[in-house]
Image 1 (cartoon, rainbow, N blue to C red):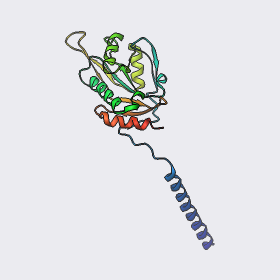
Image 2 (image 1 turned 120 degrees about the vertical axis):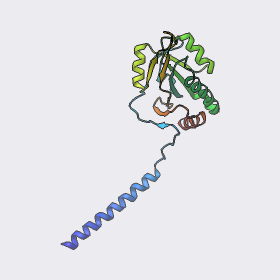
Image 3 (image 1 turned 180 degrees about the vertical axis):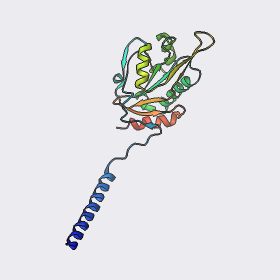
Image 4 (image 1 turned 120 degrees about the horizontal axis):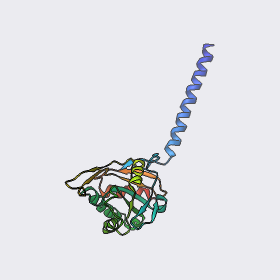
Length: 204
């Protein structure tokens, strides 16, 4: 009886070893997960999209840009440092992508819809690149889109009622050509690192 049980135990061990080998073999054959410089947020249940008017008054959705890698950044035109730095970086990223630069779509969403008029935003984004799009949420829409994208913003009073500043999150969300959120890039990551990530997303 003991010998019979020992044989059954040995058989189970042998089967387990074979199963491990098979699973290892199949795992080795599966494609490697892409490695990114930015934070991989693939499959996140937030940052699903938006429906907002752009600087020309046209209603825009994330799906409008299907076929392009979309970089979404929240800011405001009177931002002294973070916003112009990020916009300049996006221009450089487009240059670094070379022929694929036309497949990059930068989307700037203002967190200061009171002061950032359509005319002002149009002048602001096109000053960097004519293909860049600015979106203008209403105050109510801003609350919702900030919640959807987990973005922080807060008005900081200045010396006069119109000289206030806006504290806000400084990172960017990056969507693949299918419109799925894939990456979150922290402020200061550098154009080269982001361009490398976008190049990976553009690979067939």
